[in-house]
Amino acid sequence: MVEKRTEGTEYFKTKLIYMYINGILSGVSRYPEGDSFKQNPASIIKIGSNDATVDIYNIRIYDNNLTRRQIVNN
Image (cartoon, rainbow, N blue to C red):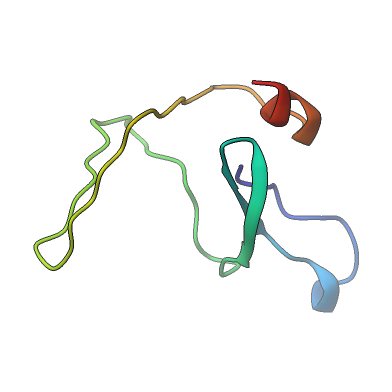
């Protein structure tokens, strides 16, 4: 789950990524202020690496915000 920047002073504004595995919150990471997950124009999502094996068994992408509870229940 990619969080929008929180409200607050410039010093305390953060943008977080919450990583869930099988409905369990497994990690949180901050990403830089200037970064964005938006694609304009939208394009195909490519996942992979020449340096690692990547297995994706299931991925869901939404165009609206889900709450943490909705993610866990999903």
